[in-house]
Image 1 (tube, helix red, strand yellow):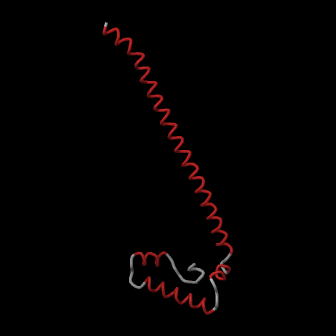
Image 2: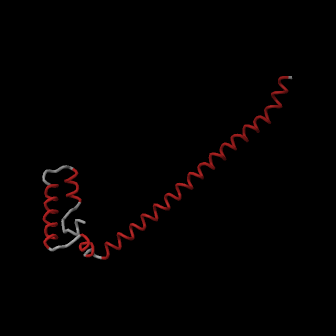
Image 3: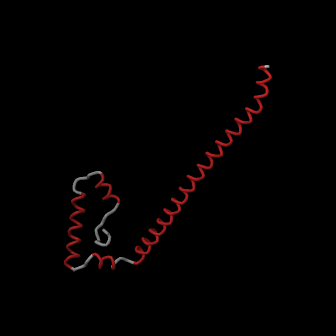
Length: 117
């Protein structure tokens, strides 16, 4: 939006604002004020300004939004399947432990009975 208003804003200004450098935020607000007054004098609305945007950034924004939505869908799909896989692995481990305990009981139970006789 700042680009549409022709207000300069870069990483240096962002850093200065975050570091609370004196006058940076006030300067940015003043630039916004001047730019908005210019647009108001020219009777440009927000919709008209959006229409003035170059086609390439609009297309890029649409594509990146679509890619983000697709990635988000895939991530939630895999998260749900990972939960199911973890549950299955836990069940398999429990079954293996039960089988080991049963085998140990079967192997050592006769020897314990012989010792007690």
